Each structure stands twice: as C-alpha cells, then as structure tokens.
Length: 239
Image (cartoon, rainbow, N blue to C red):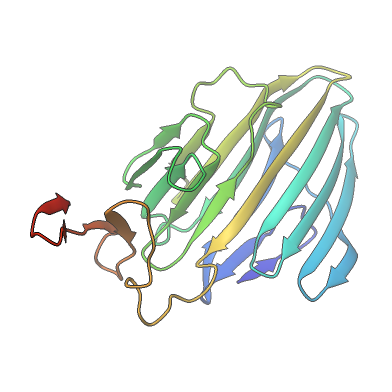
C-alpha cells in the first residue's frame, strides 16, 4: 500500500496492489476542502506519526495522525469555530472500477451485525463503526470507534454516492458549528488487502459459525459458503 500526501491533511491518493483505491480524501468545512501540510514528528520502522495545524479567519484545526506498518491510518482532529460553520464532513473519492461493493460492520468477533451489497445506486447508512468500499481484489475501509462527538441531525450520516463521474464515500460529522464551539473527530482509514491471502485460502479460514464469507476473484462476486457437518452417527448437525 502507498499513502501519498501532497500538502494535505489526508492522503491525496491511496494505492493497494499497485492500483489506486482512493483519488482524494479531505475534510470539508463550509463546503470547501481543508488543506494544509502534515509534519513527521516521529518515525520508526513500524510506525510514523504526523501533526499539522490549519488556521483561517473562520476556524482553527489541529490534527495528529499515525500510520502503522500494516497500513492502518488513524486521525485525531480538533476543529474550533472562530465564526459560525456548516457542512463539516469527510469526502473520499473512490474510482468506479474499485467501488463495486460495500460492507458495513458493527465490529467485534462474531457479533454486531452488518450490511453488504452492490454499489449500483446511492447508499445511505446510519452510523456503522466500519464501512468498506471495494471490489473483489482491493478496497478501502473507513472506521471510527464512536459517533458521540458528531453534531448532525441526519439519521444516515454516511453515504456512498456518484458525483461527477466518480464514487464518493461521505461522512457528515456536523451540520453546523457555532462560533466558539469545538468538535473532536477521530477516524481511521485502511487500504485492503492488508496482506496477501495464503495459498491454501479459503481452507485457512476460521469462524464460529458454519458459514464463511469467501472473497472470490473477479468477475465473481463475494459469496458465503456453508459447511454441512455430520455427527459420528451420520446425523446432520447444521448447514
């Protein structure tokens, strides 16, 4: 994976398996992208930490980010309004040939629920801790631990939409922010796959149910395989 920054608080492009999975990523305030450089504050073989500040007549923004060896990018953003603000949201551009499927997950091992489907129309989602968009080979995950700090009245603050010939993952954090107010935003990005699948896949899969989700190669869609188990006496246990 390659996360490329160019005078930006979020990666200008993200590449996975030598193909672009994100063509843009930016926080928007008043309908305008927030731009500013990040500075590397700490670097190690397994982790890089970055920080940046943007000051305008309308707001002050501070950001701390880190990227780890597996491609996990975490961002902590504090936005202080110097005047009344509106339309505070994240927009991530994803090429149409990548944005074939979406998956929203509640998180946790074997629990939390989820939704999976085709990206063949606009998708409106309530808050889910993890939202992935991609195709059979690669994709991009957005995630957040909570929406407790969000200030939006929308029941569906997460959207996957087609605009200007490209797919966008949009996350509405706040409808408005009054002068003098602050908002703290914490979220992550992760390009997939995190690592190559083993040669024995899917026989290396482990699950607590009989059904296992399989990632088939294009042009086949991801499917769920079911195992039929028999007891020593030949009785059916499940499928």
